[in-house]
Image 1 (cartoon, rainbow, N blue to C red):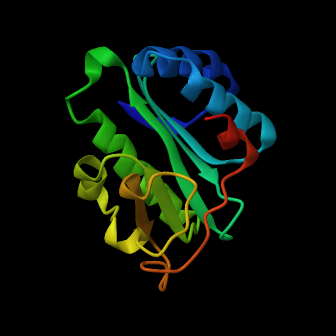
Image 2 (cartoon, rainbow, N blue to C red; image 1 turned 180 degrees about the horizontal axis):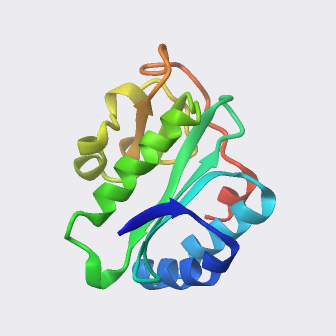
Length: 160
């Protein structure tokens, strides 16, 4: 399994993977819109034998500066439940640190994302357009855990 940055040749496969994994087109449309707007900070695929098995994207938040949003992550249905999603998330978060993201937010289930270091407690003072009980923070830079910040997502998120 190779984890690498997305290349142009991957776009169609990523779109199909997203639509299949989520069983709806919204996530694929979001990634395409973020890509077109230049709002993706990082986009990775997990590839094996020339086939894209997983995908993760991190978008730059409009504010606070240097904060990113994990959105979305997916794994081919036949590979789900085998740890590939976790591997992609861990690798992606390592790349976020290397690229000097200050923090990463995710909207999702705390029972899943807390195992990677995301925290509801660290996000408790954030103002977010999404449900507070599903907004978690992965603090990287000092002072980001518990920060009182207003999360402003890039325009493509408005369609969700």
